Amino acid sequence: MSAAYFITGTDTDVGKTTIAAGLLHAARSAGMSTAAGKPVASGCDVTPKGLRNSDALALLAECSLPLTYAQVNPVAFEPPIAPHLAAREAGVALTVQSLLTPMLDILDMLADFTLIEGAGGWRVPLADQDNLSDLAMALGLPVILVVGVRLGCINHALLTAEAIAQDGLQLAGWVANIIDPKTSRLEENLATLAERIPAPCLGRVPKLKSVTAEAVAEHLQLDLLD
Image (cartoon, rainbow, N blue to C red; front, side, top):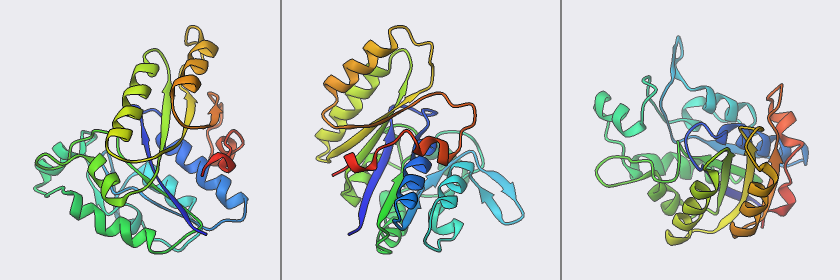
């Protein structure tokens, strides 16, 4: 039986890809086939093979199915700026439909465990009035929320959870990614998140000296997902 999720974060740079790669690694370790998509990415490197994004490459490395880079990350931009601004500068129409078809192609591969990773937080703009959250709605996938644990994360997490619910999607689970281990009252903050986010906590990932998918996977529990 195949399972697929849309993974988002409370903000940019909260470790979405780190957690996504860990989840994919955990699935592979459990004997599941894996696939992933990063529909749009900015901040890409120019290479002889074309633009490459480090996050998309990290996801591709944890895919057991034979996916190409272009399948995983169909829309890539060089400037490290918001995707809709990068698209505007490049003269590209960044619409939900342009991202939907390649992501549906990945889902149609029916891997045992598939992740589609957003960019930034939940309400990242695309063209016109479209948001990346509209892509998640079009895909109809349950959502995994990565909470970057630092000062202010409770507000960001609860607002994001509310927005996901208002958009009619299921919050399947959340992960506490400890960005700032010196956060004041860390345990109390984590307890508040657990009390108020209406979904199971899939794991608490400490600030690791060596950030690898294998190391992250050790702190995650896939069996808590529906």
